[in-house]
Structure formats: structure tokens, C-alpha cells
Image (cartoon, rainbow, N blue to C red):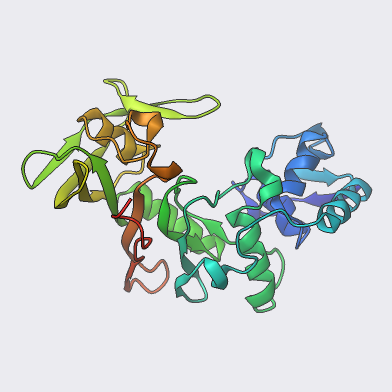
Length: 307
């Protein structure tokens, strides 16, 4: 059994992130297996990975089981079809010592969950960090996405490389200071050239989370403009949000009768070859350390408008 006493550096951090930092190179899925098997303890009690740490907490890991799971996991033949390096099929749009902005392909899940055996963005980021990061003093910080993109949504995603950057960017996002612009192909042609959807959204948790307008929901505003009409009674929209509610764009566009093409969950009539036509196109934000304005653009997939 290996024990760690939590310092103030990790105050408020999730337990699963601390475990991954304490065992560099361990895949995210292995950490989840250890938690499910009850092999990780927080203050003497079997713990959940989402538990938040406090200074003075004691974390214990059944180290022999951890090492055995890690060896078994690494020895298994890879089943992932995604790139094993971020710079291969997951392009880097911007990078410095504090942040990384990538172009996430559609189909790549950010956190593995039940798809752990197929790889995830977190696994790819850890391999990238181990290969490229300069030696640093403990404790390590795992490269961490500071906002969400659904599995089938492609495009620009901000990754924090340090804890101060993660905190500053998370605060900026919660305050609406990060400008997010998307491209979406929707069913039908919205009237006029532009519009704004201002409807509170409530999220209903389950096997598949789902959001819908509700008076008791959280504030959410989505602005859009029609860039052009497409064949098959579809339209290409430029969509901007400052809030980041679960499935905000998908739920809002569906609520006005224009679901995103391929989004069967929100009422789209066509499957579009299994593709969801939503792409995180542009991001603009202040650098968490220098204050400089960072603006990045992720080109949409080649078939974005043509299927």
C-alpha cells in the first residue's frame, strides 16, 4: 500500500487526476479500474474518482494491484484507430508552456468512460506530455481540457498544461470571457439572416444526458447567422455562445425546429451517415498568464457541407 498526504497544491483537485499524476504513464482507464475495484482509499475509505481533495487528506493505493493492472493494460494489443500522438491526426493549433489548443476530430471521446478500451483524448494527451514536456518538479499536472466537446463534435479545444492556467481559463469560461464560434449544418432554412435563442436549459442526467428548454433551467444564449443555403433543404450556420451548457447548441437549434443534421437525439430526420454536423470553428480568449489575445481557427472537415 502506498500512501500520499495531500498538500495545498492539490486543494480542490479531483482524486482521479491526482492518482494519474502520482503514477506517470498510467492510462486513464487503469485509474478508473482501480477505483471501481475499491483499490484506492481517501482517508481510509474506498473513494470515488470525482472526490475533491483537501490539504491534509491521506490517499492510499494498493500499489501491487495498480502495477499489475498497468502492466496488463499496456501489454494488451491496441484497439484504437486514433493517432497515438497528438501531432499526427489531432493537429495542434497553438501551444506554449501554459496552454495547448488542438483540433479534435469527430468520434474521439475526451474521457473514456465505458469506451476506455478504445482510447481517449486524455490518453493521447498523456502520451504527448510524456514525450514533449520538459522535466518538472513534483507534483506533476496532467494536461487537462478546460471545456467540453461532445464525442461527435469536431474542432478547437483548449488544454491547460499547468494548474494556474486551468484555474484561470475555467474562471474565464464561467464568466463568458471565452468567445466560441461554431459551424453547424441544420435541417431547414431559418427565417431571416440571423437570430438569437435565449431559453434557459435544464439537463436531464441518465445513460445519455439530454438538455431541453425549461423555466427552471440555467441561463443560455445562442446567436446564429445563416452563411448559406445548402442542398436538401439544409443551411450552414455560424453559431456563437458564451455560456457552455450541456448540448446547448444542439438543444437550442432543435427547439426552434432546426436540429443539427445527423443529430437523431434532438430530432433530426436524417442520419447523415452517422455524422453530427457541428464543428468548433473559432476560439478567442486572453492568455491566462500574459493577457495577450489568443485567436485560433480550426478548419471544418472536408465533407462538412457536402453530405
